[in-house]
Amino acid sequence: MSQSSSQVVLITGCSSGFGLLTAARLAAKGYAVVATMRDLRKEGNLASEVNRRGGAVEVLQLDVTDKLSVARAVEHIRMSHGRIDVLVNNAGYGIGGFFEDLTDEEIRAQMETNFFGVQNVTRAVIPLMRQCRSGKIINISSVAGFSTSPAFSAYNASKWALEAFSESLRYELQFFGIDVLLIEPGTYKTRIFYENAQYAQNFDNPQSPYFVWSQHLRKRVLAYVNDCHKDPEEIGIMVEKLIRAKNPPFRNIPDIESQMLSWLRRVLPFRIYSAMIRMFFMEGFSRSRPGEADHNPMRSERNSSMPAQVR
Image 1 (tube, rainbow, N blue to C red):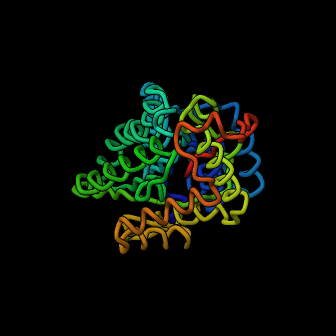
Image 2 (cartoon, rainbow, N blue to C red):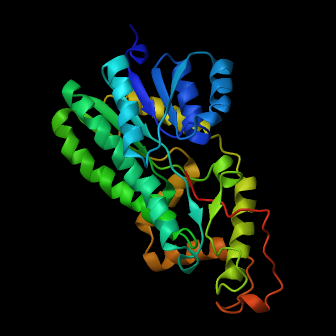
Image 3 (cartoon, rainbow, N blue to C red):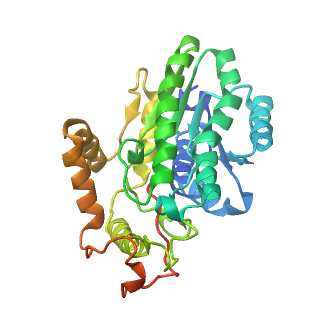
């Protein structure tokens, strides 16, 4: 029996993007893939991709923010397979918006999915891995887990929390032969930037003191995403590589662009690095001050959405 066919892989957030591509790739390589998603009505795209590549996946309903949903899915896998060898915590989203434009509920919802959701699934899976005294937990983080930007404070906070949790958990689970790993992707052109994009309740409110900046950032980020030609399949390739590796590194950045960003973050004084980030996001922006939004001729583009950083 091959290494891949003997391993059971649970992946969250498989209705689109990284999760869908990773599930389809691993299924084609012979892994026993359990692909989960919150809304099973969205499984059509995954089924089509799996049929195109070959292989098979088992699709289960799992909402990472619902502990009962998580428990049901993990118990089903335990009864069906007896174990979980690899957990890929991929489910997540990003909300765009300046802090004052975000409601408390929006910020908490961001943390519930991207941080507490990861903990919910991980907590349910660890006992199965401990029994086998082996396993890998691969958390899909983001460059936003080590480099922040304006209008993404909620998303950045969720990913920074995920990074700290993963590092601490790595120490704890090494006693049981369980490895905890991070993947920190940069920007890839996926549905999270378009039909799946979410943004603050007051993002398009002309009365917001950040309105002018919000509209500029929307255009700036969308232009950057539209010009992005990196292949999202790189995440699935890296997941497969980490599964197969005997001693994989803790932090893993798939794209060269983000590797460079990580290097600059480490070596540059913060004053210089922060100026570079500010220049990138605010390039081409007329230097209006907060509070001048209602005097600016720019208008809300309600048919467009502020894309989330991702993952």
